[in-house]
Image (tube, rainbow, N blue to C red; front, side, top):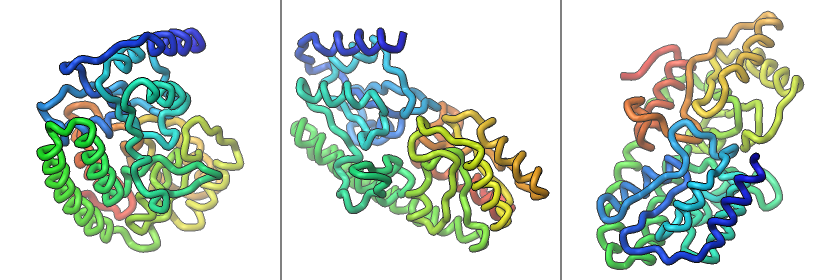
Amino acid sequence: MRGCVWVVLFGVLGCARVPGDGEPLVVTTTLLADAVRTIVQEDMPVEVLMGPGVDPHLYKPTAQDGERLQRARAVIAHGLRLEGKMETVLRSLARQKPVIFAAELLPRESLRQVGPEQYDPHVWFDVRLWRELVLRLADTLAALFPQWGTQWRERARQYAQELTHVDQWIRQQLQRIPAQRRVLVTIHDAFAYFGRAYGMETVALQGVSTVAEFGLHDVVRVAELIERRQVPAVFVESTLPARLMDNVVQMVRLRGGSVRIAGELFSDALGAPGSGAETYVGMMQSNVRRIVGGLAGDSLP
């Protein structure tokens, strides 16, 4: 069945169609949609393919996605292999219409390399890096649609100022965590940019993609680190099954140690409306409050 979806999707994309002025910008992820909507506001409709809580690494596109991509005025994807196999479709579509791979607008030297020509795509967890991405994305969109260029760049500049304040807030709040407890244990390796930016060690069961499998040796590795560093809490993720972390907690207890699951972090997608994490800023604030509550033993208002 999965193969049939890809055949249909490529078939739809193969049909030539010229988008009209009223057609939307189509964005792959909720994180990018939040940034793009902040920039364009009411000037142009924005549609997002992947909803809240959807894992982009494992996303299965539908025939309807193909139709939406075909009628889009332009497409904004994340890139750096975040969209998994769907990236092949997006690269092919780029021969027909503008497709912006937003994370690939960033300088290569600012990215975390995880293999030959492979980079960690989770750049949004460094607010300063996300700020730079937003500014570069606004410049790219302004070049494509110059009639809105001035206001789009100005909105991005104002939003960048807000992100500077968010970055400062995060640094202040993380000071509540004692230095020896600044170890963030999660299911997959999504938070390395967060650790690099804010002085935390990050440990995960899986690699940067949730496609990667893990085994008993990974569970033992993480459990040993928790025991050695006396980490009080670990975290599950909004886009992954919580039971994956249960294996680690059970292993720690079998070894005579103690650790608790301190709650859920938003990793590869924003939260649903009303969650408090339906925007990028809300997501970052929600995550920091939960991290501080779990590792420092207190909670933030």
